[in-house]
Length: 190
Length: 103
Image (cartoon, rainbow over all chains, first blue to last red; front, top):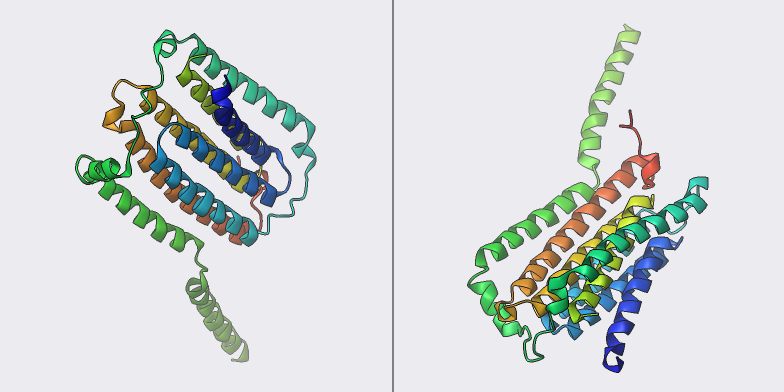
């Protein structure tokens, strides 16, 4: 099928990036390959006619989440991972086995499903224009939209609270010990 | 192979790769990347079924994918903040070294 070559290219980029992200040693390389996999998935969305989702995928995953992952790697100094003995051969074999088992069970049921065989792709003029997505977001999906806004605010506050340095609390904890030391010294003097 | 099933098979392969990574890698950041890959596989399923479904004009799969993207962003932010907090306390993010609750 010559008209399917873009799909095969995007699928190869996606799966190759995913496999590389899950098997490479260097964490920075892993983050880069994961960003490539997310971008390939955006290309598949474009072929399926979901332009807005493809743009959002590139913005959110390739732009934001890959950046967050790189920042976390740099903040935890994870670029140089020391290899333990357990991280080598049997791990890779078990990983291959898991991929094979999960993939075979899913693909077997997909390929044998009779209702999927009858389906065809919808007509090419069926797309998801951004205007209709916006209308839907403002009418039928307005409650989920507000909930997602609340969730994002809570997640942002939670991330800041979790990742912030605990200096005021540390000072509070050190003050009683200073007082206790002073009291001990006074007791020793008397 | 029918048109929807090739997308579904790519999604199944992506999910299994992400699952193997999340189950086997010992670095917390790589586990998070594996979870993101599994979420992306689910999103691809939503888009494929939207495109091949009975009522593509209803945009249900697209809306679901957009909300799923937002939730994935929130999850990644909180997960990475947790990883940074754990690193600050324990000086490691290798999951098999974080075993102080182990029985």
